[in-house]
Length: 74
Image (cartoon, rainbow, N blue to C red; front, side):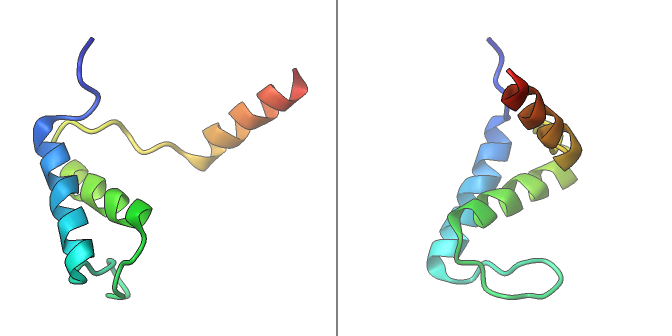
């Protein structure tokens, strides 16, 4: 089975996590300090996507909502 994320993408996430732990990771437009682990991972994946590394497409909220409604109908 193939990898979902490339090794380079994993390295970008690792770098973002280290920056968060050091307290130097800032969010995009506002420039506020990031404290959430989930947000740090999202920033790392976003940067990897921007540079063209192998990362799956970002899931849309519409698709997730549709899946939830299908499950609840069962």
